[in-house]
Image (cartoon, rainbow, N blue to C red; front, top):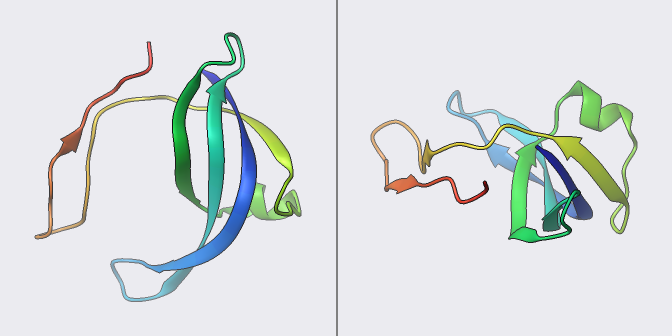
Amino acid sequence: MRFRATVERFGKKTNYHGYPEPTILLKDVCLVDTDKQVTDHIWFTVGKTIQSLDLKPGDTVEFDARVGDYVKGYVNHREYIDERTVD
């Protein structure tokens, strides 16, 4: 599926090894085909591809992604399964 979103800000999270990892917050995530908003925000880990884009807050991005169920949290701290809502 192809999505469009706006860069809100950058942050950091601690990974399961205890090291900091850069993150990016995208807001107003919509399906490109229908312009239907699928979520108000989503956090991604910043990898080499995202880092190479030199994004700034306010930039608009489009990206392809697979959508599926996932378990929130991490090892020994699971919360619940967020179900897929995009069709």
